[in-house]
Length: 138
Figure 1 (cartoon, one colour):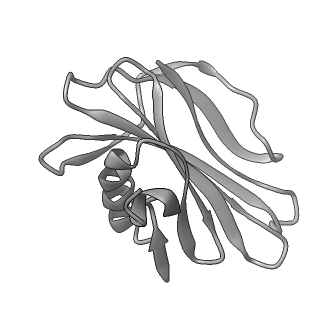
Figure 2 (cartoon, one colour):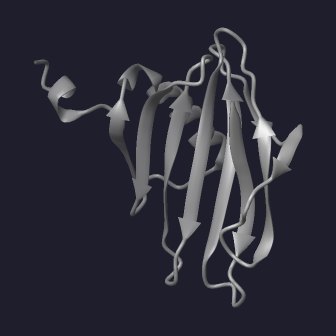
């Protein structure tokens, strides 16, 4: 599986984007993937760099792909995607207004997103990683 790793910002520094890849194991180990570089990728903004990395997780590992964008007023928003060992998207959560919310997929993979958020020290006021229909017990 090939994913883009990027860190770039606009010419005036008002907008910025960060894309990172992590491999998370069942026992709680979180490892950031920075290589091997497979090729070049087009960056979003003018300053910075972007490149493709090849990720091959173990059988019981999952890959968490983090995309965070800082806007004009300093607000950060983005999403966290979880891929299983075969490269299939199994869970997605969105981050807006200091809240981490379920978007789609199997909520059994929310633990991986939580571990990556703790490792990156991202401020979160409220976690809502399980869909409402599942919380009500239907």
